[in-house]
Length: 123
Image (tube, rainbow, N blue to C red):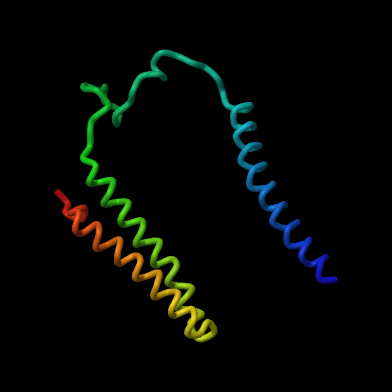
């Protein structure tokens, strides 16, 4: 009985994995099959809010903006991990508290490192 339940869990994961791959592939194939195909030179030009472009579209941006956004995403993900832990804290016990403290300390080490490298300065 135990082995059957174990195999059913893997079967469910396999079914969801197949659906996760198959549904987007079928949707993309049907979209390619059903869309109109009328190429023209106007469709291959660059487009900037309805105005003809007047300079090269490859403009260099400061890397700090990307790093700042990446730091935001990292600490946003931290809150995603903290929320379920906080909801189930009474059931988890002291071991989960220690694990979460280690996780938060690792994130704080990353924050201090970024602060010392002056990544958090906007300009």
